[in-house]
Image 1 (cartoon, rainbow, N blue to C red):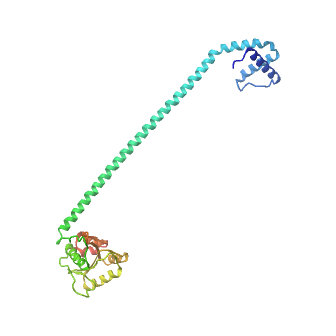
Image 2: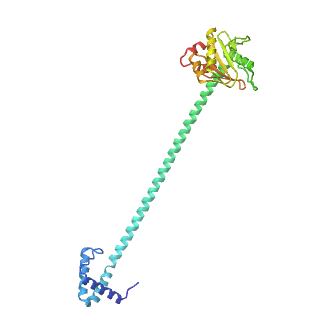
Length: 288
């Protein structure tokens, strides 16, 4: 709202009266000490002689108009400084965004290269492992084909106890004991298959062979002066495997339905892979 000349006059008079009543008022909060003292002295003069107020108003108006260019220049400088600071902040923000985007792109590219290198290394490793498995499988097939007798065919419907003995006899011949035969006499001490060097007990059930059966087979083999072999379609207890490993007895698991043979202990695995020809040497090795 624009003040009239009378309102401005009344305001100046009121201010002059206040300064005369409180001469200690300081105006340093708005102006420098020199300017504050000059204005305070001017207000005190007006308070002492109110007749000077119109002249003071005219002089103040002239000073205001005279200082308008400098005031405008300062205002424009402030605006320019504010605009420059804003533009600088925007420029720095844009540069920062560009740097962050470039850093993110570089990080993503590095991760993509690392992932690609890792995938290539994993693919090469898988290819190497596949080639190694193929080589091992080819060697196993070659050894199996080179065996003196073929491996028995799978029996999809399973086998009886007598059939299991005949199946194990076929496995023994395939492993190299061509003279293996099933026993046909009673009181054979649980021996189901015999050859010149080996005696075999066959356990055709899904349970676990106890250590007492393993000990019994070992005792019969020691009495006969032959090497004991335990064939089962199930498993063997931990105590039984520990005793078999201690006395160098091979434990093997057969599957009539699948036509496969696996070792239950290290010596059994060695026999499946290499046959019975070097059994004595393999049984004497500490790791088997």
